[in-house]
Length: 323
Ligand code: 6CS
Ligand code: FE
Image (tube, rainbow, N blue to C red; front, side, top):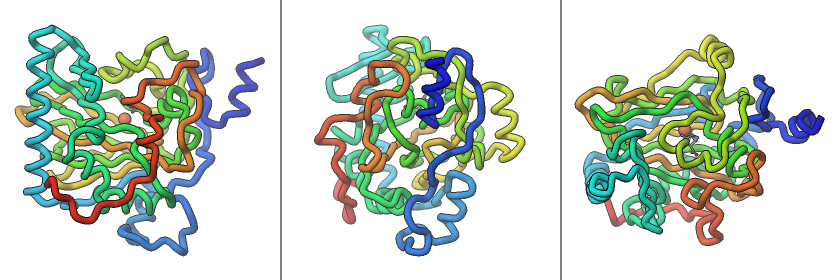
């Protein structure tokens, strides 16, 4: 009976041994008072975001800015890839960056925490074109929950199965409410052919309680390939029946903004074109992490920051100097 009690107290409780269900979302998507919303997003764009759970803004960054950022990211990747290959590792923690390979390979899938140590990434995370829009949607000051450069490399990129980020962030990181969102800055053209992000429009209005307890130290493997906290076939069918599946395609320089509880995924990149993106997860300062709602031990700093220095409000940057 402890199990029933936990779900009643926590509207977003997930990963019990025997509960799989779809619950209504208990919180807003666009926060604050609609009538007073001024900012970079128009009313119409906010309405689209509220209904669909995502929006793509084309050409938010120009080609020169993106080229500079992409070169920095790929040279960082190439440095670590040499280490991965020579040491036959699938995981590198330098004390600053954390690099994760594709499952069963030494090709780099993601590099975490670039916003903390790489100047271009730090400025991107604070750029007003992004941070101003995030503040508008979340109606508060914000900080970065985690960041990663996702390399969906040509031929080798493996993608991710359908999931809600918030399901993991709530259960494993102790994020109280879905007052959080992500921005994906496209560093290469994203096409269906090279594994563009897929979303299920409208799915963010439902909370899918996933069956199955979280294994110990789940986080490590889950960054390569997620097996826990996944919607079952029935939930997936229902969400797709209601909202369909949309490819968030766009040219380099476009930005995808999406709600933390939107179901999304991507498939294998067997094309000859790299798909390089930076993923920035923002959280409201009024929604900082507490103890995890699932397993007792929270995930490490690079996936859910608790460092007092990094949970401070971002001050939007108007004139980036690094790109
Ligand atoms: O680990 C995270 O925080 C994010 N990444 C994955 C693969 N799943 C959960 C969440 O989206
Ligand atoms: Fe995700």
